[in-house]
Length: 133
Image (cartoon, rainbow, N blue to C red; front, side):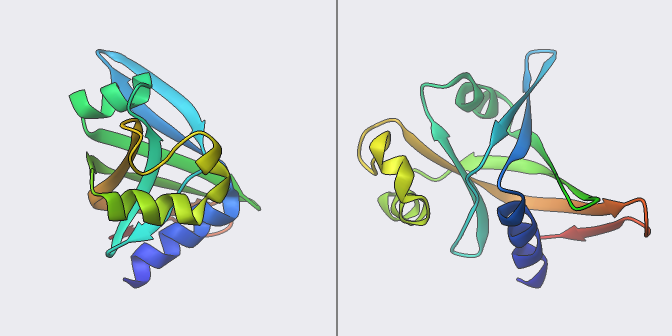
C-alpha cells in the first residue's frame, strides 16, 4: 500500500497529469485531474461518451505523466472499468465539483482502475526509482 499511496500523493499534488492512450496506431494524450484510491486500487474518472473511454476499452494499456518541483512521475499499466455505484460514489465524493456534470447513476460516469501498475519517479538530481502497486 505504501507504493500506491506514494503514487497517489504525487499525482494529487500535481493537480494535472497527462494520460496517454492508443487510438489505433496513433497515441493520444490529454490532461486529467481525477485520482482516487478505492479498495486498494488507483482510480481515475471520465465519461463513457468520451473518445478516451473508447480508447481504453479497446486497448487498456495506458501511461500517465506528471511533473512538479523538478520531479516527474510516469505511471503505466492496464486500466479496467469498475461500474459499481460505490466506486463511482467514492470518486465523486472526492471531487464534488464533478457532480455538476456527473452522477453515480447517469449512465455516463466511468471510473477506471489500474489492475496492476508501475511508476517511475525521476528527477535530474537523483537516480530514477521504479515501484509497483
